[in-house]
Length: 113
Length: 113
Image (cartoon, rainbow over all chains, first blue to last red; front, top):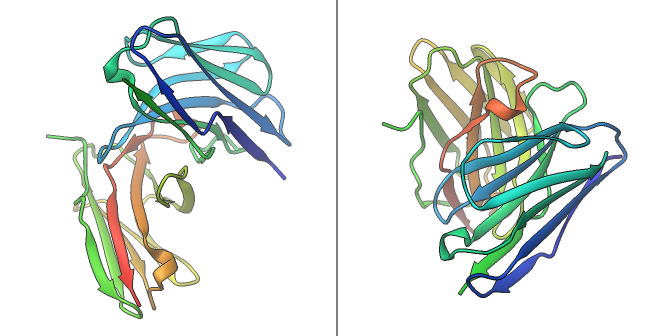
């Protein structure tokens, strides 16, 4: 069966510090991968998606970046965090048939102080 | 106006009640509709996936799509305290388009024993 792991689960960082959130998928190959952000009481905002190694599309201009160094690894990064980067970050992979069904990880809660 | 509207709630019901959760949308090109359930501090999990209009049933859950009214619903029969969560609707214009999902803001449901 397929599983998706995200870490760390919780992170408190000062403004201006770097960020690295990791996501790995098991039990599937060449999945489409996604990074979303969820602000309190708001819907999911797509940040990045990837259809393959080193193939990243950015949906929202921001100080975040994403990388996919391996087929089943997706990393969200920032060189300098802003207060507005606080939120709940979710990694997801798309179901086998690429029908738009997304399967999410447990999420990483980031607080920037 | 948001592309997908969802009442944020909270919606509080007694155990055993029938719950109706709804989303309205403005884009008539949406054809694929999903409902996700999200427990507190967890990632969303896919509950129901439907294409075009009509009903789909899965256990205590029924998803209904009315494209003429641009309105989708999720019904939960015999609601249980374990159903307490936030329910997110999501939709897209075509399949093979996980990057084009539009999410509602979510409705928080509380089922009281």
